[in-house]
Amino acid sequence: MREEEEEEKAVLEQIFGSSSEESDGSDGYSDGEREGEWEWESISEVKGLWLCPNFLSPRHQSRILASIQSQNWFPSPSINQAMRFGLQHLPSWAPPLAHSIRRSIRLQAHNPPPFPPHILHREPLFDQMIANVYQPGEGICAHVDLLRFDDGIAILSLESDCVMHFTNASLSVPVLLTPGSLILMSGEARYHWKHEINRSPEFQIWQGRQLTQSKRTSITLRKLSPSTP
Ligand SMILES: O=C(O)CCC(=O)C(=O)O
Ligand SMILES: [Fe+2]
Image (tube, rainbow, N blue to C red; front, side, top):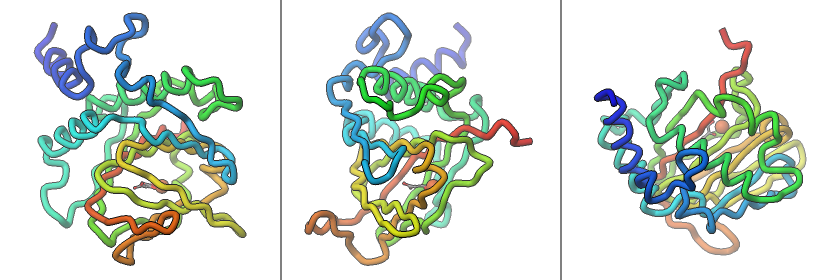
């Protein structure tokens, strides 16, 4: 095994556990420890929006955060975003994460599934990543992701709870994003609804409860549109 491959394997094992520990033995890496926790919920008001509240264990969340820190993606408070384009430039934990997303969807018999088959089976599932860091009070304005990105977007939340609102012309639908949760957007949710996080008050309210704000990190995984030059 080449040196880089060994290094890669070590990083993956550090983040996701060794394959002998957690592999199902059939299709490579599997986040075996988590499989019982994966429950996909459809957000019924927003077609194409799905939430898996316990996607990543606290241990796996910490390992991803430690990897981000060790690679110094955010060397100063003024830098709050890191982007990677191209499969070969994604962090080593991103492909296993994509694999787990696929596996979690295949394991559940939802109809329609959280990602439609043409997205679920594309290769690669994602080739672009953006990591965002939000300090307390910071969020993101209502937007639809750029069309240079294809359908089928995943957002992993880390460190702090927040409420994300999905809005269209007449409705605003709040969704609680807890650390370790993952949302998937496709179709209408991706193209016809805006998403936004307003943390400008010192707290957000979820079902009458105040959510304490602290630093939040999110990882958005997308696929570049085929037409992108
Ligand atoms: O931080 C988030 O959860 C959302 C990020 C987002 O919407 C984006 O990067 O387009
Ligand atoms: Fe977005």
